[in-house]
Image (cartoon, rainbow, N blue to C red; front, side, top):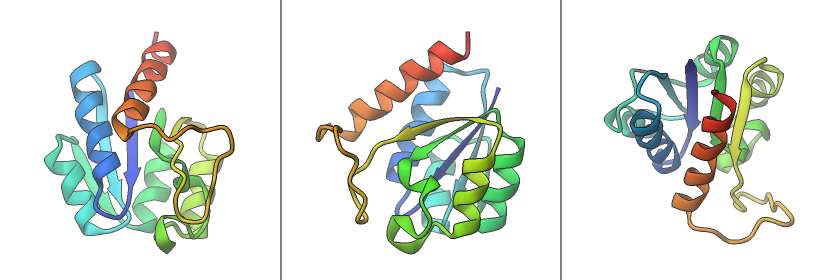
Length: 135
């Protein structure tokens, strides 16, 4: 199972995802793509097997992944404070991969019906879904 984790800013959400995936799905091949080098380094430090940075890395990674995960902003152009380019959002949206998106009410995007929940709880819910689809 090839899992692509995408994150920006400081890579905090992506790092949590990488750490949890490694613990719960040790057989998974994890590729981390940051929208900047800080995010990439953070996810690599968390244990990703492969890492790259930038728009083209997202496009190529989305083409090759079985599962893509990250904050919901990875499918919204100009989100993550402008770090997600239209090409990145399109690549993730059009990928044949299953997408597990973490709802974050930031960057002028508000997801109605999503309660304010600690990021760790959201990551836990993502791991539960990953377990359900990987069977």
